[in-house]
Image 1 (cartoon, helix red, strand yellow):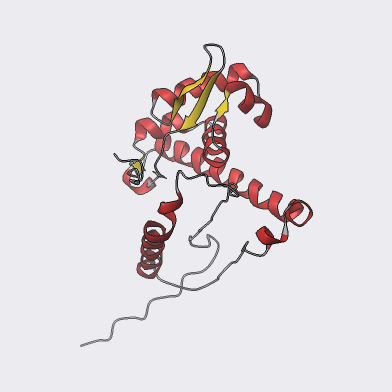
Image 2: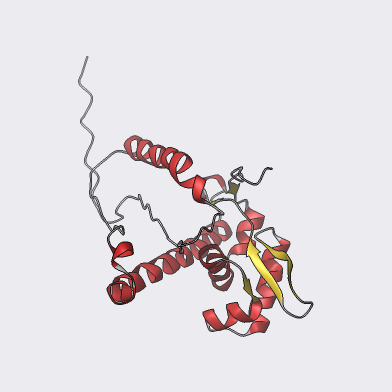
Length: 205
């Protein structure tokens, strides 16, 4: 794969999902995704954990292909780690409906959302105090409420995936002067306690 080629997406299977299904492992992977390379001790300091714990979970993540050691950086005692390139997709409907599968899926999704919510809350609480106007002026937080069918939701998701492919993937892996970590959210899901509009009865022939 060339330097400018976009890595293929990784579809989680049950083995890799279960390997990831630990809150600290999800936190480690998200931290490497957001901020870049870290040592085990650096991750421990940021996440409020012991370096022994982060070292252990880094080795487990490496074993299952989520992270890798940074070549040419660090020493034998202080290894640097980075996330493997490429997007990670979790399609729960393709993994089989078992209690173990559901528990692993919930663990990963729950921690992903906690991490995302934490970054968004931090931006809302401190952004106006610490960020320059040039960053505040281009930031966007928006919510759209609609009533749609499953087919319409699928269409929206497909449009979003096409948008990412065309406009966002080009920025993966770059680090130009003046850049900083930016997180872009797209959430599309049915409101659980909302009512479903009844279907019209078929007309009699």
